[in-house]
Image 1 (cartoon, helix red, strand yellow):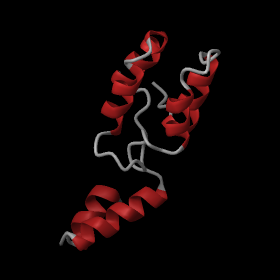
Image 2 (cartoon, rainbow, N blue to C red):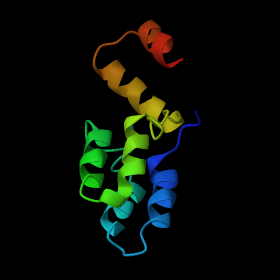
Image 3 (cartoon, rainbow, N blue to C red):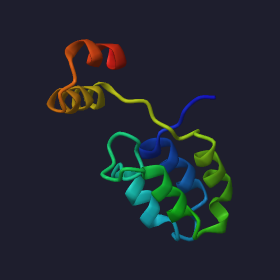
Length: 102
């Protein structure tokens, strides 16, 4: 399964079914990384996304895709650097950080 991103693929998928404009708020939130696994300010962005989608029956297929993990992002290099910094500030050793993040 190819992973999709919330800030690009989800935006495209929602736009395709948004003829009424009802999903504009969710699309804007996705464009602003509010549902992204590593860039969101939410600790559980996919739970927020599923809750937001639950108000719109026309999004059921997308909601199911989210629950199956199809929109789970991998960290990019910027995300890894932020994780390294956070782990280092939390007292993790360089060896541990290298083991989990490479």
